[in-house]
Image 1 (tube, rainbow, N blue to C red):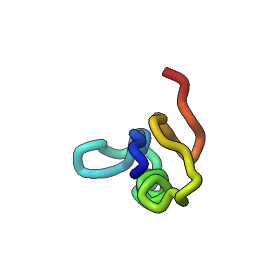
Image 2 (cartoon, rainbow, N blue to C red; image 1 turned 90 degrees about the vertical axis):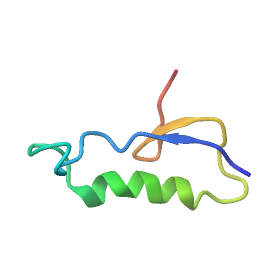
Image 3 (spheres, rainbow, N blue to C red; image 1 turned 135 degrees about the vertical axis):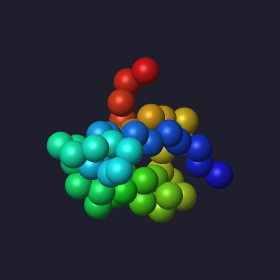
Image 4 (cartoon, helix red, strand yellow; image 1 turned 90 degrees about the horizontal axis):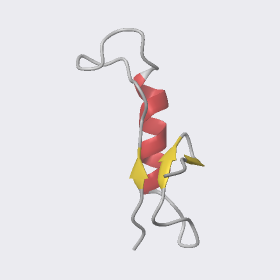
Length: 54
C-alpha cells in the first residue's frame, strides 16, 4: 500500500473561483497518485508529479 498526499493547486471550480488552473490539470495530480506503480514513492506530498518538501 502506498500513502501519499496530493495538492491539486488552485483550481477554477465553484469553490476555487475563476483564475485558477483548469480542473483537468488539477485532477491529473490526483490521478497520478491514485495510479502510482508498485515501485512508486510513498510517504510524500506531491503536486504535478513532483515531491514538495516538508
